[in-house]
Amino acid sequence: MTLSETLAEALPCRVPQLDDPKIEARLLQLVELADAAWPSFHVSPTRLVSSIGRWIDAETDLSEALASVHAEELYLAIACAQGVPQALKALHHGYGEEVERAIARVRSSCVNSDDLRQIVMDHLLVGTADRPAALGRYSGRGSLAGWLRVTCGRAAVLAARRGQRDQSTATVHPHSDVLALVQSPEFDFIRHQHRAEFRSAFEAAAAELTDRQRSVLRQSIVNRLTVRQLGRMYDVHYATVSRWIKDARNALIGHTRALLGKKLGLADHELDEFLGDMSSQLDLTLSRILGEE
Image (cartoon, rainbow, N blue to C red; front, side, top):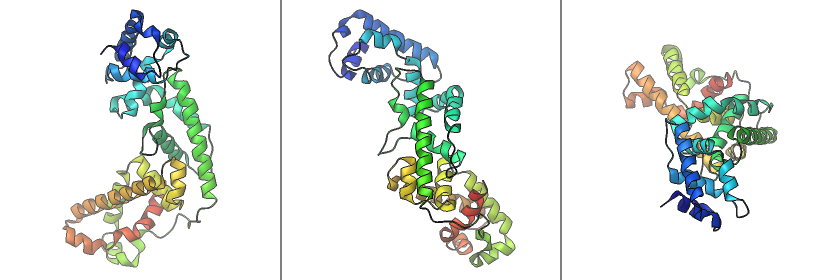
C-alpha cells in the first residue's frame, strides 16, 4: 500500500488530489524528515501518515495541509503517546520548560505544585479506559510548543478548580504531627527494639512509589479527598482512582515487608507476627511521611 492510499483511508472523504504524484512525494518527504529528526526511536510511516490524515477535513486543501503540517513534532507526539522512553526523554528535554511555564501560571492553595504537575502529566501522557492520553490528540497543524502551552495550562486550571471545590467538602485532617505508626501500642516491640529499621524500610519503600502513586496517596490520606473527588481532579472514573490507591498501598506494604524481612532476617510467617495488620495502621505513617514533603 502506498502512503497516498494510507492517507486516503484516514481522510473523512475522497479527495481528488490523492491521484497527484506530488502527494506521494510529499508524504515520503515528511516521513524522511521525521525519521531524521528523531533517530533514537521509530514510528511507522503508516502510523504517521494516518495521524496526519485524521485531522484533515473535506474542505481543507490537501497540498496546503501537507505543506504546513509539523510532521517531526507529530512523530514525537505519537511516540510519546505510545510510551516510548526515548521519545518521552526528548519531549522533556525539548518541551519541558513549556510545560513548566504553563503549570507555574496556575496558583492553588488546595493542590501543591508537585501534585498539579503530576495531574497534568497524567492528562498529557497516560491514557485510561475513560480517556485517552491528551497528547494523542495533537494534530500537527500547529507547533507542539504552542499546543502544549494551551493544553497543559487548561489541564492545570481545571485540576486546581476541582481541588478547590473538593477541598471545601473534604474532611478536615489532623495536623501533620499525627502519631506515627511506630508509636502505636500494636507495635510496641518495633518501637522499643527496631524502630529505626522499620522507619528506614518504610521510607525506602515510599521512595520507590511512582510520582502518581505518591500523589494519590497524599491526596487521599493527608488531604482526605475521596476517590470520587480525586476522579474529578484527574478526570478519570473513580474506580480507576480506587485501583491506583489499592495498587500503591499494596506496593508500599510489599516492599516494606521485603526490606524489613531482609534487614532483620525474618521469614514471612515471622513478619506476619512482627507487623500484625500493617495495612490498618498504614495511613498513620503515610500521613507523617507524605505530609512532611
